[in-house]
Length: 330
Image 1 (cartoon, rainbow, N blue to C red):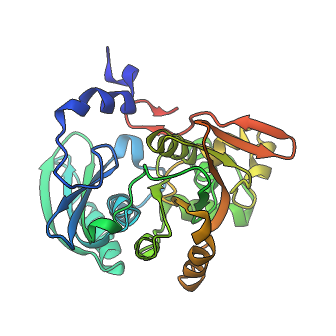
Image 2: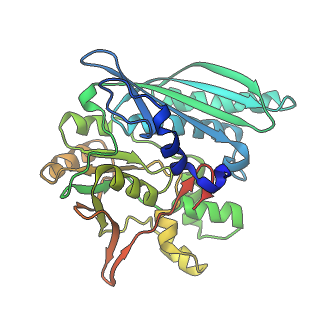
Image 3: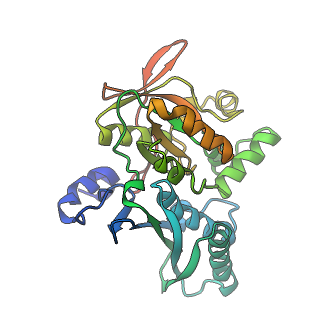
């Protein structure tokens, strides 16, 4: 069997027995980040993410934007677990005839986002390859009880997100299929696609208040994120407030595209998806307001192991839309 036929998540399950979990670690091997207990009060949280030009470099993306994107990719899974990033590294592999100035721009974009967010860029590795392959490694610190996995949701918890979805789907359609959008939507979609942003420190603040039970970023798509959190937590979710970005549904209908797939399956948005104990919701909302973070309640965790969308027209099951590293978009 070819690895493309198997897919990313079945492959992870297949190699699970080869991976060892450190005693007292909070995160499992497939939790995107890993943690190493250092003391009773401090753990090291580590993440690694790769960017391959053939599949990840979008038309019109500059070298600096590509480098910045790798920094976002590496840091996202650190901050969403409740850790404070302290340092990053970059592996830069390019063809031997690649322009030096372009390679420098990649590193500059990576370094500048690290500098902007207070995460020190401390080094890395260089190599040659047939394609441009960029790998970012992020290191963070968190108290052991402040590390939030994707598996802690309980029935009754409120399902929330820190942003709205679908802009990157519109961006992909503009860049890859030459579709046109209204000026405002066009600008917002390309901004989201080329220069995604992260919310730093929010999950760690909620963790200090016991106001978050599970988290995951939406980089593979909201649908895959919800299905993964559901499976790992042993519960289900009902989405009753569709978190669509303004203009996305109108755009989808104009071009006869699947509006639900655009919202639930876009990916590359790096939005926090989290569950909050119901009695802590008001407290979490206050923290979000003070931190200028657009926290939105979109549903609730249920005892039924399904991911559903409830609208005025009825209730439907949300399919598994999103990105698979080996099969690409599914």
